[in-house]
Length: 398
Image (tube, rainbow, N blue to C red):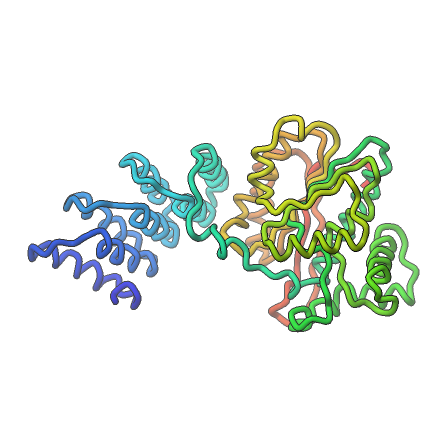
């Protein structure tokens, strides 16, 4: 009851009173008290309870440490979060990724970017098992249909078309990797798409503008691809379907090129396979229902030979989408695949956050990075008004 009501002081006093009166506490009641502190960001009480459990010979488990590290993260105590994480392994408690992600979050809150990446690297090196927050059905609840066709989508896709047009001028084969491919094709007549009607001031406005204005270059090609795919899907008039990055890439890649489209959500990956099959999937293209980041980390060395283009478009909606993960993979791919162009999409929020994010990119030491951003006024304040892409090693003609 104390935990549910966020009465952390009552939980601590109750725990201390039980011990003083000779009433034995157990792991469950102790964890409830620590969780009450965690929910209220009272890191001092959480660490005190964790220490008292040891003094009273109460078994501490992963839940005990997960809650204590999380309390430190919410209290902006990154050093104490790391110390508690270290203690968990010193006392041989079998932990999971939940405590690690809380420690990473603590480092991010306090501007300790390099330390956040070190913690993530340590977690991967140790092969720490995933916690409940990363397992199904918690792994991915993001539904892109609500955002499909918005200005941010148009920006990322025009950049994608620009880069692919440049890179396919070279006859040498190219391997394209889409780390978060999505369903590939989105029906804009559905209730989800029409909930906020994000496509109206995005792709729809662009298509309508093209009827009265002669676009050129990548923008014209992007409009042509959207219209062409709609026609192939039986929509010769107007715009019913919004075409995503994997289908656009499939249309622009050549017979000598290969493509890997990653999508962890079963429904979305099934939709992607169907869309690609209906629109003409090439022999060198594969849809993998796997975690792209883990797959790339475990890929053999010969995969990273030759020219590559990695398009990283994460949903930024779950613990897996922490900037630490994205920037870790940006640096990892840069180091392991020297002949690759890497693109990372990100939402553009307040200026303070953006400046901090740029500094983190500089600290990665991946060389010159091309930054492309779009900031516009949207009809509703709930709609995303700013986004950007980082391009590492852009082709010379981009």
